[in-house]
Image (cartoon, rainbow, N blue to C red; front, side, top):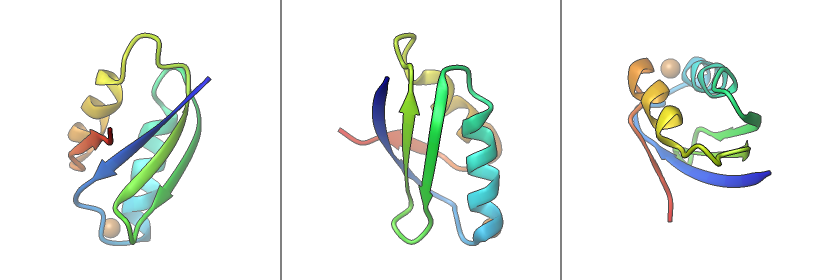
Length: 70
Ligand SMILES: [Cu+2]
């Protein structure tokens, strides 16, 4: 298991948080999701041996462009 931190744009309310959480939980390998609305960030725990592109892609599709924080 690995932890990545995402910086997410476009979240404005609790519903956005729910959308983001749901989208992230639907990605294969994701085990745990914690979204911080005020910070525009999320912490994701899971198996990312296949990379994080699918996570970024799924958030993009939902309308919340994200980046993995270095
Ligand atoms: Cu919202």
